[in-house]
Image 1 (cartoon, rainbow, N blue to C red):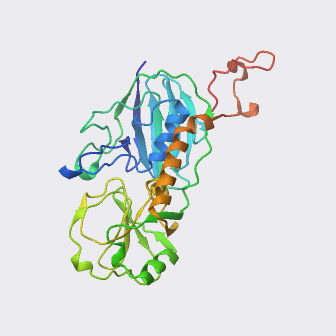
Image 2: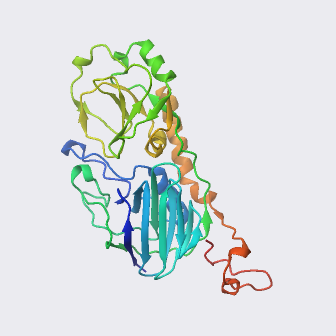
Length: 338
C-alpha cells in the first residue's frame, strides 16, 4: 500500500532526485538526477526495489520527517547522524518507520550528499520523464517544511538490513580519459595535472566543482580555436584563469572552455561526495580500460542486493525486549532492527 511522509524541518538544498532525464540535451536540459547515483543503487538494494525510484537528496544537512503510515526506509550516501523517535538508526541500512514516528537526520559527518529512500519511492510529479528536481533548468523546487511527500505502493517487507558503504566520502584518486581538447594541452601540462594534489573548492554545487591547487593554472595551446559544443557530466573544463572545473549532474549542456579530460561515470560519485577541502588527484587511463571498468561497476551495482546483511542489535539497548517476540532465544525474523 502507498503512504506519505511529512517534512517537519528541511535542511538547505533538499530535493527529490532519481536517475534523471536523459535525452533532452538538444533542448538545453542536462540529465540532472541524483548527484551520487551509486547511493540510489545502494538504497534500492537495501529495500529490494528498482534503482529508478525517487529518493530525497540532502545536501550537507538532513531534517526532520514524520511518517503518515508505516514506511520502510533506507539511508545511504554521505553518513549523517539519524534517529527514529530518539533511538539511533544505523546509516547505510534499512529500517521500519512506523506511522506517526519521527525520523531526525543531522549534518553530514563526511561527504556531501545523503539520501532518504522509501519503499515504493516518492511519487512527486513527473516532468520530461523523471521526478528529479532540476533547479538550474527550472524544474521542481527545493523541499520545505510542511511538504507532504506521497509514496508509491511498497510490495516489500524486509527491513533491518545493512550494506558496507563504498569508500567515496574523503576524496581520493579519480580516473579520467582523454577528451576532445586534451591534445591541446602540452604533455608537460598533462603530467603536471596528474601530479597535482587538488582541493575540492568551496563553491561547488550540483552543477560542478572547482579544483583548487597551490600551483599555476593549466594552459592549453590554441584555446581560442575551441568552439562551444556539447558537454556532459564528468567533463573537466579549464577556465580562463587555468582552474579545472569538473561538471556534475546539473551541468550546462554546451560550453567553449577546453576540456583537459573526462571523469569516468563510475568515479563521479567520489567527485560529487568530496567535501570542500578534500584532496583529489587525477589519473589518465586508456579508453579500453575505462570501458572495462564501467562494465565491472555496472555488474557490481546489479549485485549489491546479495551483499546486504542483517543488522545485529545490542539487547542492552532494546527498551522493550518482549516486543521482539523472543521465544526460547529466537525471533520471528521479520522484526525491524534499528
